[in-house]
Length: 111
Image 1 (tube, rainbow, N blue to C red):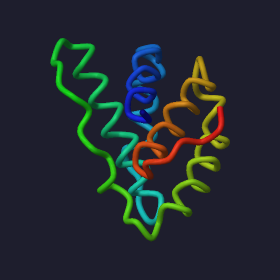
Image 2: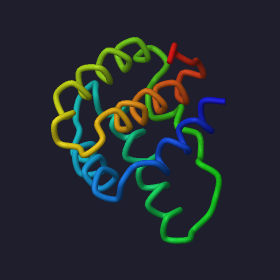
Image 3: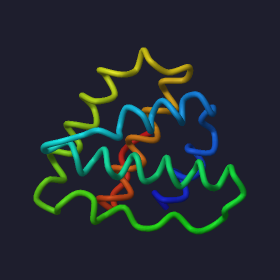
């Protein structure tokens, strides 16, 4: 299940990478706003989980309108490419971004 992979990947992020992801995704506008809102939502959920507040990751699907899913996939790749050098473990951050898109779309990409 995409949500399970996403939550496992979020848990694997370092505190530094989690905070950097939240900061980068927060001030989004335009077509990328829905994708970054979903990323921020997932990162906020993980921060709360690390603080001992346990609850299931709520659905992320409403963050990206159905007609914008293809655009979100392209934006996810471009977003990651533009920020990868800001993280300790960029491959894990990429997995989070892919996991958010998979969770929103209900589809899984190839590993």
